[in-house]
Image (cartoon, rainbow, N blue to C red; front, side, top):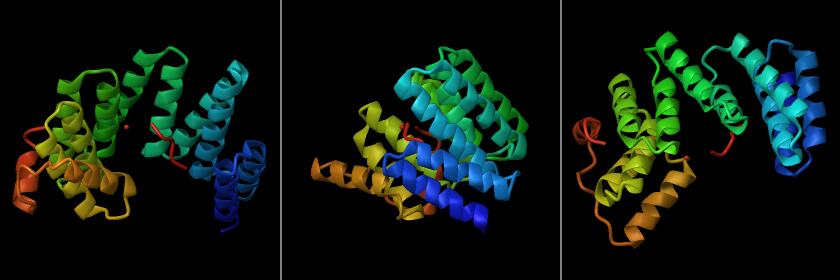
Length: 218
């Protein structure tokens, strides 16, 4: 509980623009629980942010070590995989970022998250076909995965297929109404007069899977 409290306090400090205070809080979390993967991730993400802002390679190296420590403790930590992939891209190692996600996908074929994150990488590098394939696979594993539907919506919107994008976003939002970003995309497309291509139902959602964004989370 103490570690959780320090993690929350550290996140608040990051949001308030006090990264050094956040570092102290996350270190205290680890002092209470040295096996807390979230604290390692939070500390890595904070050093990553500071290293980018100050162009400090030593700080970025420290962030990379902390991301890897997080993954040693939690092999399926989604945010940590994403953070490390972003850092690898930031440091001109995009091939390593893809290898990281491909290895995770191979090691955890039963999970949708590795496929979603690999799809995100493909999309960011302009490979929409492979992104779509990965999202189809993610939805085959978990047809009710809100993140996969949201990612499919983003890919559809980027491709100009707005009716399908709206259907995908609506499906995602029906599964997770707390995602304000997806709700905003639904509202924006509806303001443009876009109509959903297919009715919302479990059946149509599954059928959509056959057709086919980086803010760090704490």
